[in-house]
Length: 162
Image (cartoon, rainbow, N blue to C red; front, side):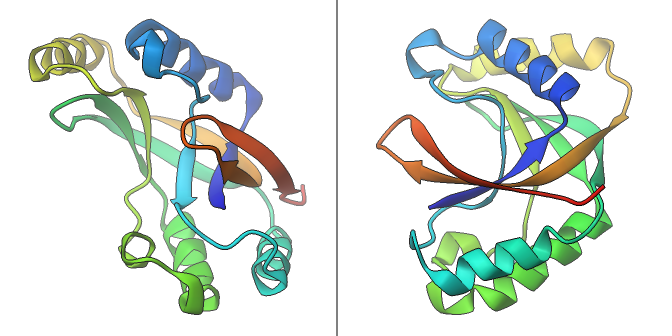
């Protein structure tokens, strides 16, 4: 099971549009997303209970603070102390099930290009930087997904209380 953050609709559309423009079509089978955990067991009642409990809060505000070229693609870097605290709390609750990857500190981001040459990534990075100004987005919940060796299947959404 994959756990992501639910992005407010206006920015979900914005980042999906960027993915459609810049992600290679053959590899773009997911909507824009912010991954919190990459691999947890499906159906584990303690995990579901922890996600329900974590959703008993107001929406999170994340700052879209920059644009990162990671060699074979480009992502928007996100910053939020509240998100870091939430992630650390969930890591503690999920400890028995965490993989090495999910034990790492969270580096929240939204990938808009991947699986391209370093030249194409650098071109997009420079292009996006020209007009970039940091801005805030709202996160409205937690989402769970089943990994299907490519696409993901939506399982459950835990909406934050308003």
